[in-house]
Length: 169
Image (cartoon, rainbow, N blue to C red; front, side, top):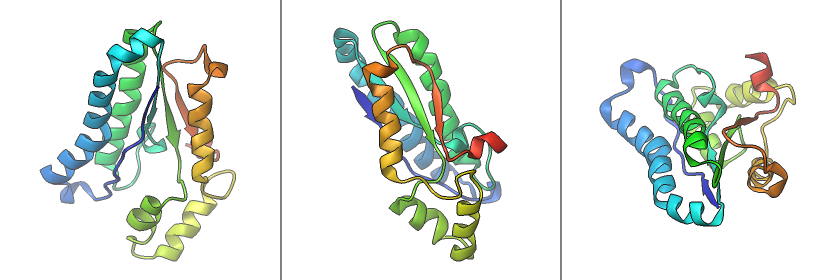
């Protein structure tokens, strides 16, 4: 089994998105995912393996000042779907698309880096139907499900775990 969970967030208006930001974001979020899969495929094909990629709700739709991040995470969704065709039936591949998760990265790079951290946190917690951020353990549970035999007939799926945010897009 392979879980691709490395990621960086880049938040900037397009006028501030330079080549360095583009390269860093796509290198970690998309290129890293691709080449980890490529390295693991021979072993995964032998053993009937399973891949779970981490994308984002932002990989399913746009977000303000998130164009480069959305591109990178949307690429993970399309990579997952494309490889589900290429790697089946030996290897299943899916991705989890979390909304806001209460992690150091979200707090550091999104909330605390905003002009008004308290207002940003309030907006995040008001947005989804469940009125809170996800706990990391809730995302882990989705990964475990997709990796388990219980999801044996699931492949090529972009699975939103977002507190209902995608229901109102």
